[in-house]
Amino acid sequence: MSRNHDAEAKANALRIAKTTTRRANAKRLEWTRRRDAAITLAHRQGASLREIGKATDLSHAAIKKIVEAHSGRVSE
Image (cartoon, rainbow, N blue to C red; front, side):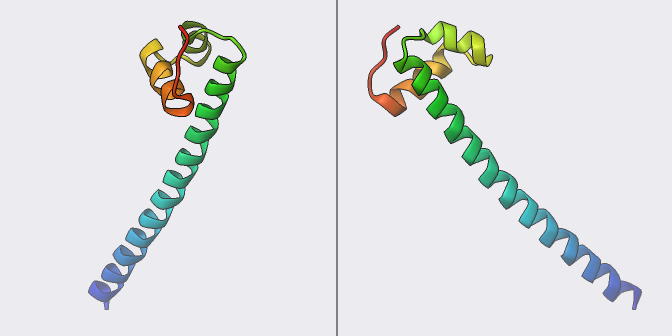
């Protein structure tokens, strides 16, 4: 009975880990989209890549990639 219980507990723990990971990944994707939209908006409103980078603690290069991906053009 102990082995069966251990196997069942293990299976339950794996299901929980899988479900939790899927939910966390979905939330991460949602918040990444929100971040990218906010960065793109700031750039459209005239903020420089460096200003946005400083405000978000992201590198200038990372900001540039986000803006290029969402707007197709970048003004330094």
